Amino acid sequence: GAGVSQSPSNKVTEKGKDVELRCDPISGHTALYWYRQSLGQGLEFLIYFQGNSAPDKSGLPSDRFSAERTGGSVSTLTIQRTQQEDSAVYLCASSLIWQGNYGYTFGSGTRLTVV
Amino acid sequence: AQKITQTQPGMFVQEKEAVTLDCTYDTSDPSYGLFWYKQPSSGEMIFLIYQGSYDQQNATEGRYSLNFQKARKSANLVISASQLGDSAMYFCAMRASGAGSYQLTFGKGTKLSVIP
Image 1 (cartoon, rainbow over the protein chains, first blue to last red):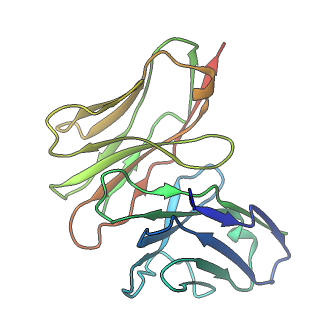
Image 2 (image 1 turned 45 degrees about the vertical axis):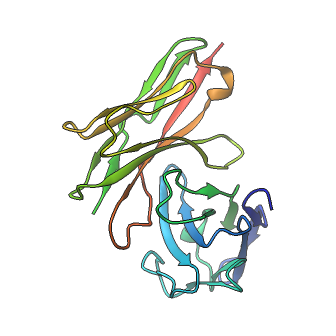
């Protein structure tokens, strides 16, 4: 596609439920990143996928968070047993090569609210 | 580890005036890149400008320029001739070169409001 697409744009869920957030990167971009943006905060790195390499999960805040990327394209971020502190905007970004000078192309994000 | 500091939570500027958004950084890596992103209310992060640590000249992109002072570890964004559409959050970010340096480390942002 022309840009990075994320769905849903908004998600309200009850505490304790599982949620799945989807990211469809720019076609041909081999690198994909997930970030989390809490209210009034900057972006917090969560996970990084590059081609067929094992993902870097070092930013995931707990084992309730997981992500996968199928076929080197679409990625899904799953949060199990959601907690209120998980409420945030989850941003996905992709890039052609990780050393690009132009940073990454971001999606519009998924606003997650845990009630 | 890298750290980005943006000390201005909010800024106001009169339309058509210039404004400077501050950014200081901390890294022990000799090679790094500095970025500025704009985030309007729609939520999307829009890339504005990039400065490499070894670049000899300050980066410019249209109305945006980056005032890079390496010794002071600062990378301030200058927006000339502000427009109402410039009202948004602005984030400074850094990526260090080297193994595993794919992450962008972001500051907490500055909310810019342009006054007509």
